[in-house]
Length: 172
Image 1 (tube, rainbow, N blue to C red):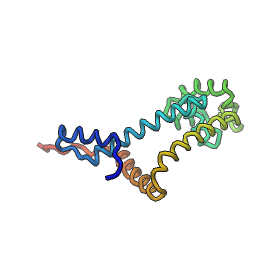
Image 2 (cartoon, helix red, strand yellow):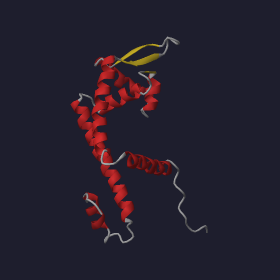
Image 3 (cartoon, rainbow, N blue to C red):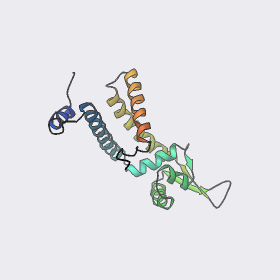
Image 4 (tube, rainbow, N blue to C red):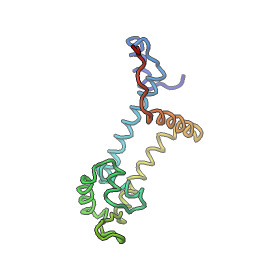
């Protein structure tokens, strides 16, 4: 076994208390939890340094993912939020000069949100910072290992996206 991390101690502490504990499952799940916590904390710090709050970045990111233009309802759906909740976000981003709202060219009753050059620059700067940290972390793996990790996590996600099986019990 190579270097040890804090999860090894966690598993060793719990193994005698929970006799049927699978150390590999506990280690993998606990490492994923800690990794996600690290990514979230790092993201908050990098966004703060970029002058963005997470909800601002998420909105700019969703808009950039739509090639810089989308209807507010589409952004709300992308962000998994109620359509009436997006207005406040867009108001704040528009005040900062990051987005512009204008009537739709095909239906003047509708509004289109557009990422401005300032908004694209703010989003890109934040993305660059996040990318550097992601590359640093995953740089612990060679390209084949990163591909294997991605494939393994995909298999886990596919299982997580399935409804759980009903518990087995007496059919009495």
